[in-house]
Image (cartoon, rainbow, N blue to C red):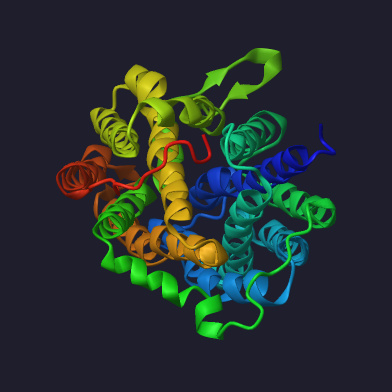
Amino acid sequence: MVGSVPGRLATMMFLQYFGLSAVIVPLTRYLQTPPGAGGLGFSPLHVGYIYMTFAVGAVVAPLVVGLLADRWFAAEKVIAATHAAMAALMGAAGRWCDTYDGTGADPADAVGPLFALVLGYAVGTQITLTLTNVISFRNLAAGAGAFWYVRLTGTFGWIVAGGVVGWGMNPISPQPLYVAAATSAVLAAFALALPHTPPKGYGRPVGEVIGLPAVNMLRDRPFVVFAGVLVLCNMMNQFYALFTSPYLHDLGVALDLGPYGELTPEVVMTLAQWCEIGCMAASPWLLRHLSLKRLMVLGLAGLVLRNALLFSAHVPGIVAVGLPMHGWGYAFYGMLGAYFVDREAPQHLRAGAQSLVTFFGSGPAVLAGNFLASHTVATHRAGGLTDWQSVWLVPLAGYAVALVVFVLLFREPPNADRSVQT
């Protein structure tokens, strides 16, 4: 099965999201942990700068992906070369942190070079995230929900990385960065065994290849509403991405399992991905029985519920319902949004169209969200303590607005074909 096209693509997805999870989830707590406890002692603003690199990468990706994968090179070769560079950059970031963390940590010395290294990795991440979708859509037959089942293995990889980092090593250390570097090195080699996916943009103007015609989709009301809500949601999501782990730590969400180690916040947060797997597995069936709009409304409602529970500080509710709702919302709005765009875009411009989604979802929105989240936390922090309820009130209001706007303004295109990719 691993040698089959779906099997190889599923392995690609597993490695892609395993490596990303090893960095994204534990890094925020490592950066903010005081030097005396082994961290780098970064302020919320410093953390925002580091995570802002992924938004910068999303701005660059649309300009790069269309040229590389639609005009010049086969997609699998771009993935291989990009992950080779990512492995070198993340290995260097791990070495840099090894030099500057612990009792001698000085954020003023560490933040600049670390920002540059993570920026290079983040650009590569956004390129490869886009191309893993492109190569999957191009090589999987429509029908039978093939893409959804391949993509959910990526979420499983995210879960496994959370367990490896949370149980198998010290997350308050550079160790997860080395895991990400090793994973990118493996994927760089494995990508050469992926299905050959040649460029489809020979002979067309550069502007067309990089996806500029996809901007015409902004004339379409459903796409505009979807994109606008996506921007607002991804702004608000930076509160979750940057500060859920330290928030859970402050709430005491950890359990000593004796010889089996500690159930850390990073491990508990993988409940979101378990829910995401279930949602993606059910998506083909649900798309046959429910409209796309109804599923996306359910996704947004789940994000409102997630933030309401984070605001409540009710630990059982957060763990049992709030964290799973993160995966629910991502599957039913984020992933279905990518499916919606792929269905609407011309076949020869789908790489550019997916890059446009990456730009909207992970570019300026995340830059603004990082700034808003880090400044909100800094404003409500005093004496080492954070007024978390005031912090979580901001994304709760933002998601509520997004839900109302989407319900009132989004109209599913009348030519929707529920049989596609189901």
